[in-house]
Image (cartoon, rainbow, N blue to C red; front, side, top):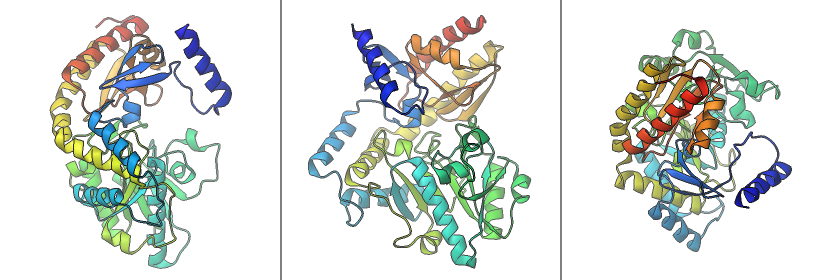
Length: 405
């Protein structure tokens, strides 16, 4: 009867919801720690975390209590007024990022939209032209709203929606000459993910970032880092660029920033803040409302109290080592990519069947392109849970491919 009920819910969803997702055939009901439970009570080890969102795991009492307390005070006021949680959250984000100004949004895509607008306004105020361009990276992913889609370097996402809303040219990540070839007097900004997520878990190389920073400084071009997925501690640093000390002019953040509550932000240097968006240029009804900001504040509290960054740095070598054992043991896996708790295994075949088999066995995984399994677990993951994941995944690979470890 319970299975019939879950099936009925899925059928109802397919009837009522616009079919923009190919969802897996389970209805998630609740979560606890590293585990999710479906409507039938089946337990799943989660190595997706809502796509790198639930950094603190599920059912964290301190986090839940903070949200309940804020709900009882006030949820929303609009940005015509100040609210204390947003003031505090902005101040703390500035301190941990080293940036100078914060604009709260509702999502990563909205953060990218704001970042592009800020860059375009900066360029316009500089020379009065309205034909500026942006350089983005091939294989990048910045979101599905029109501005974010315009700088997403995957034609399959863009081809049905042209013309795009910005003049964008695409360079190759880690190839500085490919960027230089595209720079002109109309270039307003260069945007990239410090670690590409959807594009295959590919980190930007340190020398490339240094050369890019120097190029942007030389030409007065704004450098935008998209830290929506690789930020908030996933690489062992609050933001991935901090490992190299290569500071952007504008930075986007979201996902783990609210650990489930929809909230994002874009941050700028003082130079950009003083010479770009001004009153009336940009806005959002819900961005930085008291509930979202309370979530940000509690997330930052818990990152400090639970030593999340230190844990990520300690557990990463264990995680990488266990994944490398799979690369060595299976002919069908030819590479591991990524950094920190943002990793991928590259297969010589589509991975959809392996992911479905893992779900049958109680393990939730996600892909990044057709032949890459992506691992973005909650940042609280332990060695025990890594071993559990590896054990299940090993069986799944063997059953699907016929190979033995």
